[in-house]
Length: 328
Ligand SMILES: NC(=O)c1ccc[n+]([C@@H]2O[C@H](COP(=O)([O-])OP(=O)(O)OC[C@H]3O[C@@H](n4cnc5c(N)ncnc54)[C@H](OP(=O)(O)O)[C@@H]3O)[C@@H](O)[C@H]2O)c1
Figure (cartoon, rainbow, N blue to C red):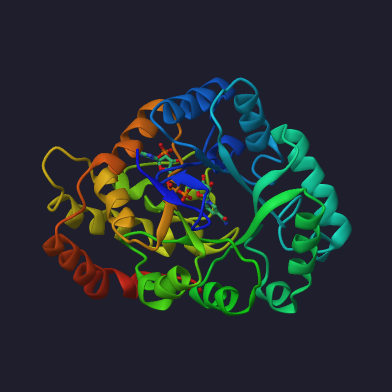
């Protein structure tokens, strides 16, 4: 495992982390035992970065991580999120009282005295622009409840706005993968210049970039890949990166022709993300130990060749970009 600087000075985090939304539901069921085994397998191979949120399973994901931390000797950097609990979008979510109470709840579930990183969880752009939420985050920081704060965004405009206007911003969490390449031109350089860490979500485009899915693949009704596949429940970009499922399968078939020998498509997809210096960590959401181990190995692989990068850039421009739905 290789490590990258989180705050460009002392804190280093593994370049592959584990995203844990799937431990809270919305991806079919994952038992607590399975979740703990997944975290253990990743940590044994050098992972020291977990991403979670208070709203994942109404606290279940954070509680599982809390249990893991209690029995682990390793120092793990846990990034959580605030702003969508209990129901995303409600005005009552964006008050000082809410921020303080929900921070206390996250601390309790994780069993720590200070949160390593709190990220605003895809809150409406108007609340980001109003700026008050950042006053509250600064206040929580002064009170010693949180160490860093960042923003998880849905669009490149939100990312650019935060980079330009938010004092003390430590990180941005963004959708970035072979199907979603716009961030490279829009804000990668600025993030590097401003020393803001980039946390990459959907690196496998909800699993489709593992190459295992076919036209006959079916998902459980409570899996967002079933109930949000066309954006019926929340931002369409969070599911398959906004690409219609059937189109995603077709595009993946093209990618399979370019997998370096001995690799899996998941590893090629993760390695592609890691090849960008602006990226600090990539957080695939492993559901079991086998997936976690396969994903971690991307860190040990060679960067993709320049020629393959060019093929994938053209692939995105000529065959993918026009199919992305939703604000991006
Ligand atoms: N708004 C936000 O801030 C936000 C939104 C989304 C995600 N996130 C974060 O990002 C994390 C990653 O989730 P994501 O949505 O970005 O999805 P992703 O990582 O692109 O895909 C994750 C899914 O792909 C499958 N998978 C993972 N590794 C695999 C492998 N090696 N081989 C085959 N299949 C594999 C698993 O599902 P199956 O086995 O069931 O196919 C897994 O649940 C989340 O857990 C969460 O922490 C944050």
